[in-house]
Length: 191
Image (tube, rainbow, N blue to C red; front, top):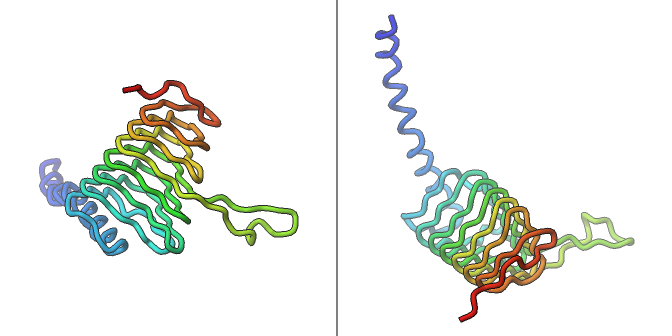
């Protein structure tokens, strides 16, 4: 009886083995359709949730995990350099622009947003609009899980952002920062 059941289920197991590569191909195709171009060597493990104008530029060799949220408004662009890794649940929201340099790795559930809601006594929060400033992240930056990068921040090449840090000011190349708000834990190497 077991051998008969195994024989009947073996085609199903074959389909399960095929499902992951097919999902990657389907996700890659849908992302390419949404953003207009996508290098063939990018790995897309699940179709990102895309909102707004979909002005997203993708470098070669990206590795995109599932459950990404990518939003661009107006003329803003999200630029992902070559070999960037966006882990599960990363949120990128651009009203002015977000640039991420080559080789940068961004940990799970990180939020990078170049805009904040305005607020005041005379206007409902929902109707108050946004203030924004572009975010620039250098090459080979490592951003830990759950970090938040706020509007106007520039992060230099090779910097490390600790998990759950809230970065509200510029970070020098090679520096290590952590905390809320993020503070320098180690300065970059001087050469």
